[in-house]
Amino acid sequence: MKRRHFATLAAAAFTAPALLAQDRTMKIWVGFPPGGSADTIARLIAEKIKGPLGQNVVVDNKPGAAGRLILGELKRMPPDGLNLVLSPSGATVIAPHLYTLNYDPIKDFTPISRIVTFDFAVTAGPGAPAGDLKSVLAWMKANPTKASYATSGAGTVPHFAGLLLSQAAGVAITHVPYKGGAPAAQDLIGGQIPLMVDTASETLEHHKAGRVRILAVTGETRSRALPDVPTLKELGINTAADAFFGLYGPPGMPADMVARIDRAVGDALKAPDIQERIYGFGLVPNHAPSAELASTQAAHLKRWEAPIKASGFKAE
View 1 (cartoon, one colour):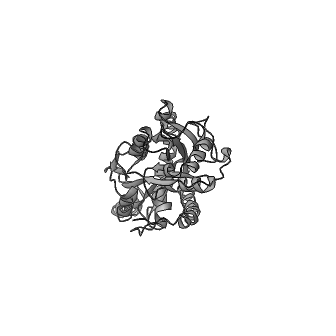
View 2 (view 1 turned 60 degrees about the vertical axis):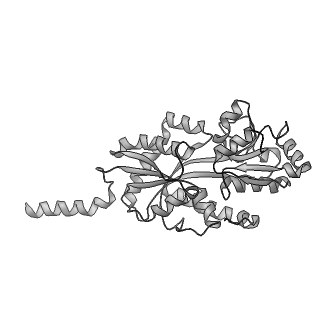
View 3 (view 1 turned 60 degrees about the horizontal axis):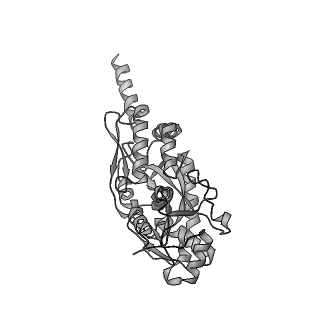
C-alpha cells in the first residue's frame, strides 16, 4: 500500500507542471490602459474561459511602451499558465525592427492562440474636403502643407500602413503621431488634422454619427463592420496592411497546458455574443492555435522588415 501511495504521489508530482494551478488566479495582462480594444477583448475572453479551465481568470493592465513593457516582464515569469499576455502584433513584428528590446519575439514566449485579425480604416475629418479618398489625396497633393495623417503612435502598424498608402498613392503625407487613438480621433473630429489611419474601432461610431468619414480600409477584403467601404486596392491603390492580437505565455510552457488554454479560447471565440462584440469593434474573431500563431507572427515579422527599413524611420 505504501509503495502504491508513493507511486501515486510521484506520478502527480511528475504531471503537476503540465496542469494549471487551479487554486490560484490566472492573469491575462494587457499592456494598455483599460477601455481600449485589447483590454475589452481580454476581458471578454477571461470571462468565457474561467468555467472550462475551472479557475478564476482576471485581466490586469500594465501600460507602457506600446505593449512592450509587459512582454519584457512576461519572459521572466514562471511557465505555470498563471500569467499570459494579450499582445497586438505591433509589439512582436514591428517593434523588433525599430527598438533594442529586452525580449526576443520568437524565442522568449510561448504562443498560445491567435485571437483576432484586423485591418485599418482610413478616415477623413472635417479638415479634409468632401469626396472620396482619391479626391482627398488629390487635395493633399495640391496642398502639401496640409497633407498629414494621424495615428495612435509612432512606430505602430498604423504608422507604417499610412506610409505604404502615401507611397502607393504617390502623395507625400506627413505622419503625426498621437499618444493613443482617442486623442487622434478627437483632433480629427475637431478639424485639426485631415486624415487618420488606425483601427476602425477608433472612428467607427463617429463615422456612423456623421462626424467623420471612413473612406477606405487597408485589408485585402472589405470589413464586415463597413461593408460599403472599399479597400485601398479596390480604389486602385496597390497596398494592404493588417494585424492581429495573440495570446502568449512565458517560455517553456508544457504543450498540454498550452493546448488546454487554447481549446478554451477557441471555444470562447465561437460564442455568438463574443463574436458580435468583436465584430462591433471592426475586428474579426479569427482563432488559430499555437503553431499557426507562431507562423503568422514569423511571416509578419519578415513582411514588415523591408518597408520599415526603407522608411528611414528611427525610433527615439
